[in-house]
Image (cartoon, rainbow over all chains, first blue to last red; front, side, top):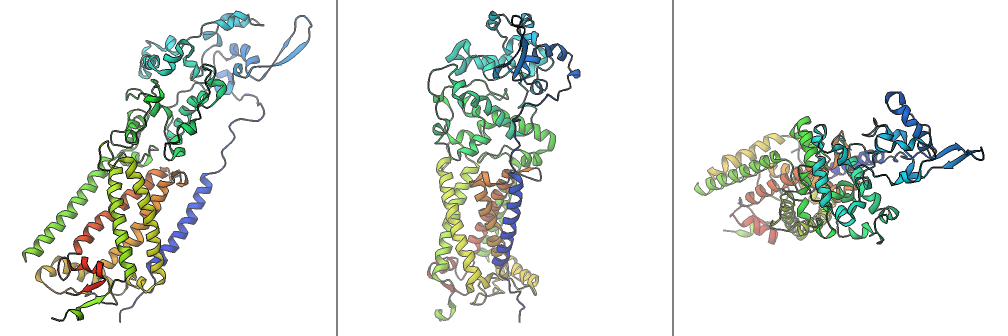
Length: 339
Length: 207
């Protein structure tokens, strides 16, 4: 008599499934730990070591008022000390400024020298502000960032065409806080969020949106209702992938197009010639491949999108296995027929 | 020749319906899965349609698999999937040698099918690996991709979604290969078509 281990495989799978669910729940709970608060509730003194920055002492002349939400001065007529609120958009956070790309600058490098006197003269606010290209254009040191191409793309964009000169670089990039992101950030998800927040700063916020238009702000969730799995798309794809003309020479496209020209076909991304691989993803994947090798890069990349197959190696392997199976079947069948 | 004595009623109606549903769903899933994986403008099934069909077929397969799973937990059919431990490899080798050598010498199958054992040892192992390995994997990873927000973000530093994707495509591919071999092996019956007929009328014809 044959001895039978009388355990049905289904029971084994059931136990494994329960273990898997347990492990999954544990991993998932640790995964979704509450996000840290980004904004401190109270204003805390800056932790920046100002001695590291050669212009910091001079900048303090500005930041003693503009560095926090309140400023104090003595009224020369009443001789009283007055404390006033600083307009939010005029507050420069030292912690943010001194990690930004422009951290080594003096305030007066870009702003008028006349600002050193207080109260500031009223006509100073009319000063023309420099745009990116004014400093970065034609500079060998910055050639790899392609500021000229960015400028050309921007000039052709719907932002520039519709709003002419009212729309400046500073609408999206804050000179005081700007920090290079897409090229240096290894975490694709944060780059995507960072880039999308730039768009949402106006397209998701009516008071900023109406700085340049009187139109009502379209409801983004409603406008994108046609997009399947909206949440996944919003967190994994940058707005500009569909709303700008992507060139694979630029990591961040600036040629934002009219709504009617935006990408709407699934195949544009979910295909072998995916537009996603034109810019950021191409950059990330090639960086990863250089650093980690093809296989690990494939697994490490955050750039998951259904459809486009990143690995030709796996395709070839699977094709070979399939071809061999069919070949063995044909040989087997032929031998059976022959005998 | 007495046909009736060689015919055993082996496949009750519910098994045949389940098998047919499963086969159809797998075919739809393989075709749509391939068109999603190799999607390009102009593929046979359009991406949107392929995704919708793939999702629907996947959900139906989950239902049909749950039926199979429960059926094999609680009905006598589950006994066919219990692999006897003793002499397992010897029996496996015997079956393997039959398929690679014996079959061409018109030898008799070493483990003829009867009510007690519906599957030969090789078949049994394949079905267990398939139905209790690859299929649950493909279903679980499929749900993970259907609801990417429930999938873990990272797994030992690897992207959770990419791993799920790889697991899904890998097990899907394995299932497709097994399906090809399965269909071919079905031609090894009393006549090349008799096994296909069995899955329609329920009677197995010995050879």
